[in-house]
Image 1 (cartoon, rainbow over the protein chains, first blue to last red):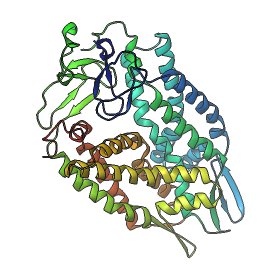
Image 2 (image 1 turned 180 degrees about the horizontal axis):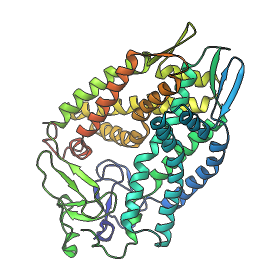
Image 3 (image 1 turned 30 degrees about the vertical axis):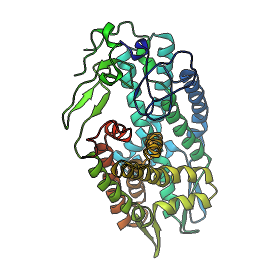
Image 4 (image 1 turned 180 degrees about the vertical axis):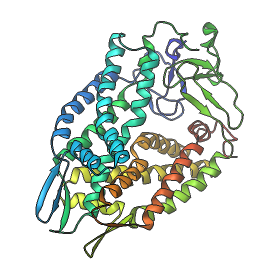
Length: 207
Length: 219
């Protein structure tokens, strides 16, 4: 049985149970004072909005250079993918793999994954509840790791600072990429995981 | 294991005897936990809560350790780069400043928030919450601060930053001579203490202690 069927609301912030009061739109948690809702309001719409914005920014994030390495007056702008390829050329496969996963695979997987979650919550079709919750947890856990490239740029810009001899500066692609990461993280926050279980047929499909 | 059966009578039980999964909304009877045990949701596997001993004291010690490490971790050099006789230092703070100065203000603000401001705010929130429980003062502010802490949680990214340091070191390795600085040691220390703190400071017990429902949480 779901808490919602018993007229019980879970506080999203402190997880305290609250009996649903009849006729109030804005009920607050008896323990921590946060607003309590049956389900996060407009969760699906908000998540879609954030996801679509992220998907649009995903294009400049990958096509525009994220940083320019200049040495002896010659500048070489590089995109995210070019950075990975460069690491492969140097033979540093483990680090190249980490950067490739964090900067290319994870953002792509997140965009597709959140889209699939929303689609399957709205249409019931493609995934079982177990697959959906697995996907949700994976996305929630992995999201922050995409900031890796942004931090690398911050460190490189600070440390490679030798004037004309060698210097590194960040470019527009970095802004787009950071925005994609933040928007997809926000999308994971606005998505209410309880929706995943709401349209599963039986209550007892646990072990 | 929590017991999800006999649905009809479940909703009539008093709220104190009930427990609902935050991630899938399954309603259950509340299980009694001994120290070190944890309750998992039988349907989706979410960790409902754990019970640990000495939560407040141990967390306080860890928070204070983390705060002491915070300044050296962020302002002492993480690495030094030597290129044809010129040296440059890198600290977490200098990365923020360098981005800001080269016209990438927005990225600079994001780096500042994720690697410095939010980790610090999280620690300060935790410190004040624990003090409020320990000395039994300002519980309502404690509740508010603990709510803020939960909103900030995902946005502090120390471990990602550390991985960024490693990637940067590898990228620079054959361009110039690198020496690792004391700042990196402090940074790793800060990260370890903070992860340990998140494990020790069981949210369920802190919420109970803040609302005065659990007299033993402070033990």
